[in-house]
Amino acid sequence: MNRSLKSINILSTRQLKAAVALAGAALVSFSLSAAARADDLAVWDDQTYEGQSAVIEQLNKEFEAAHSGVTIKRTARTFDDMKLTLKLAVSAGDGPVITKVNQGAGDMGAMVKEGLLLPVDEYIKKFAWDKRQSDSVLARDRWEGAKFGVGKTYGISGLGEIVGLYYNKKILDDAGVALPKTFEELLADLDKLKEKGVAPFMMGSAKQHLALHMIGAIDQAHIDAGNRAELDDLIYGRGGSWNTKGNIESAKLVQQWAKGGYFFPGFEGISGDDAVQLFISGQGAFLISGTWYFGDMQHNPDIGFMAIPAPKGISKPLSVGGVDLAWAITSLAKSKATQDLAGEYVDYMVSEKAAETWAAAGYLPATSLAADAKPKLTPLLSSGIEMWKTLNANDALGHYPDWSSPTMLKTIDDNTPLLLSGKITPEAFVDAMDKDYQAYLKGQK
Image (cartoon, rainbow, N blue to C red):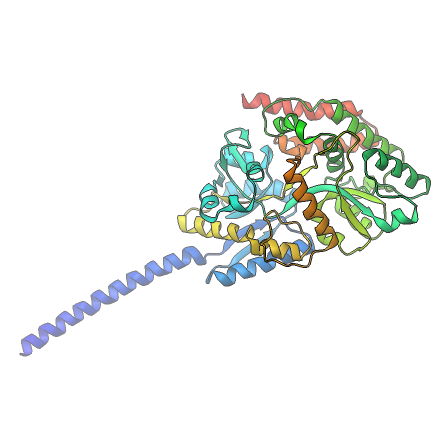
């Protein structure tokens, strides 16, 4: 009996030890699993404007609340800073797990080539992202070797973007100038404003890319959607030449405006962001830029937004735009658990809930709003949403010229000040773009 009790006690002790060991192993396993999910999730984004940053902070808090133990370690960088640091940081192993990345050869294409980004096609299927955004929009995040627009998908964007014409209705009314319906009317309006001593265009060329967007927007407003193949071929690296009559004429017109006093005085020393703030304060009648400024622009109720008026004979003009920088998952997401968590984060950032939050803040979401969503839309956003619908229906969403090669943005930025100051001809400006592009094509063979 005593022996039996002793045996039972011994057995119980062994069982207890085994149970403790199993519990310990389970605890370790749970801890490791929890650690995989609870590790700080490093995220880089480019939402540095006050309104955009507030939305990101809100969405991050909501994601953390829905994912116990997950902490988002956010780093906000400007577009230019992101371009300089992202690839190096991921290569060095101290960059983000999730990041915004500029589409095109210079950024997304280069990172895909070096294996620094992971495909997200698995998550497109899992979360049905292709039901939220059109295939033509998703194609802007696809790469197959050096081929842009085809192959695997490496990102998805949360915001739609359109480069259009901002106008100050009060300034126009005071000058007796009506909103232009055609490009020819826009040219006439500019002359009237200049005669009355009003700066027709707000411009800043010291930093950022207002001049690039102006030149591209004017050129693409002269292209009908039915004739977009040539531009698509250029952007997707299929060949062609930037040295066209349309590009030269657009560069020539912008140069004439710069030299003829159509831009705000001292524009050469003003950054793009500062030019926008001057425009919001009531300086300048028109400004050509994108919907990403909606959140700031809404503070002046006199400001409206429209497509660049098309010249006579163009029924479905292109508008420069597409989507904002894509959400992407980097190669620093080593484990499947981390990759899946990253996929969940990106999914939330392009969800209908996120779209409603962006819309409520005055920004144009790339994901369509849910049928029962009722955000209070600003007049600017209402205009943007209608333009977005029209452009997608007409297949008239154009492209950013700098997406066409890894070095095109620098080439354009280096030469734009020279063009505006008259130090180079429009032909030389366009020729610099084409030389950059042809060198890129040659390097891909």
